[in-house]
Image 1 (cartoon, rainbow, N blue to C red):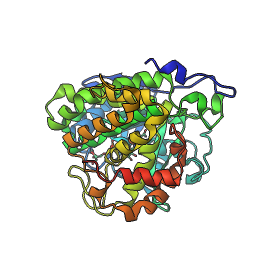
Image 2: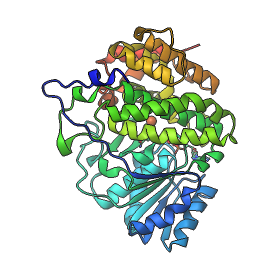
Image 3: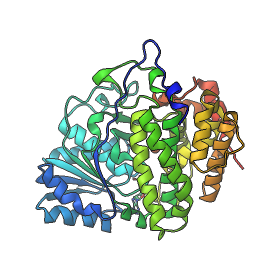
Image 4: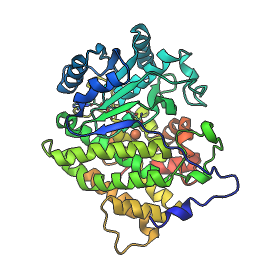
Length: 436
Ligand SMILES: NC(=O)c1ccc[n+]([C@@H]2O[C@H](COP(=O)([O-])OP(=O)(O)OC[C@H]3O[C@@H](n4cnc5c(N)ncnc54)[C@H](O)[C@@H]3O)[C@@H](O)[C@H]2O)c1
Ligand SMILES: [Fe+2]
């Protein structure tokens, strides 16, 4: 990428380094069967296995349990993980982890399961008031004081990349806002990324999680570059996510190429093993990238959307309560954001559009924002995404509530390449109402 080195030019006061954390990962068809030998290698004799109510009776949990049993590892199962977890569900899981006297953990599920397992591991390893480790300013933002127990993460969706990150996201019910706990110590010890799990994924989940993966990559590449990070902490105090850097660029660019090539096919046809496997790989690449670079506006704005939507249900997701899948809430803001942020780094936006498969041959860097927005819109249309926030029931009268809902997200919003205030947030939401 021609633009990299200039983008990462140092100035006085720049942090001179960036830190990338990741687990030891194994990628490949059938690798869930390696859970037992990995547990043994980590010295585990008794593990808490986290999953959700739908997956617990399925083949993926069965494969992991069989492998653990074959290696003589004792297992207690927690299957009441809440899809889109909240503070109460995290704390319930933490009680299970503390009561079980485990020497390690295994998670088999999507982001909801893996994040719940990370939180349960943390609070059972280093007990504290719940808000102690939650990101400041919502929580105390206390540093995790030491290592947590080993965690083998087995993702069953192709999007969050949570198997590679030190991030656990939940909804704080008192604020109706999503926030998280972030520490390099929460990165799973081992990730077993088995693309075979995607065969059973409903197409709606392939689409939503695929856009989560896409947005992780786009936000990594377009984030404020690490030498211009606003939080100056360095050394071991350096935050997990530090802004765009050359390593994240490389992984995120490759992830975008895969999303551009395979997302539509993966959504359309559950038997398209190649497409679904490539999306699983893309999700893992994006996870490593955004863990180090950080997300910004699309994620920051998404939490207000998912928190304020009143009636919404997507087939393939749990019935009952309103639920906007995370990746769907994230993609709805994408095109509006790229039209606004491209002026900060037009070449990077053009590079993203090209990587995602747009024909950029006759375009100039200044066309980058529109080219990227158009390519994302084309992918949304091809995969059955709603046509903007209006489809979820929002209109002009909700702009204030949406802007207020995004305010707790200033930690990620500050990672955007341009300065953003309340007026800009309102206009970004306005621009996301309807795309076609
Ligand atoms: N920690 C991170 O780094 C990170 C990153 C992005 C998102 N997240 C969080 O992850 C959560 C979303 O996770 P998700 O999108 O992976 O989905 P999910 O874990 O919420 O699961 C969605 C649905 O898919 C089902 N499902 C999962 N795997 C399946 C399979 N193989 N076959 C059939 N059904 C399956 C689940 O049972 C559930 O009903 C959100 O809370 C989001 O904020 C975390
Ligand atoms: Fe995400």
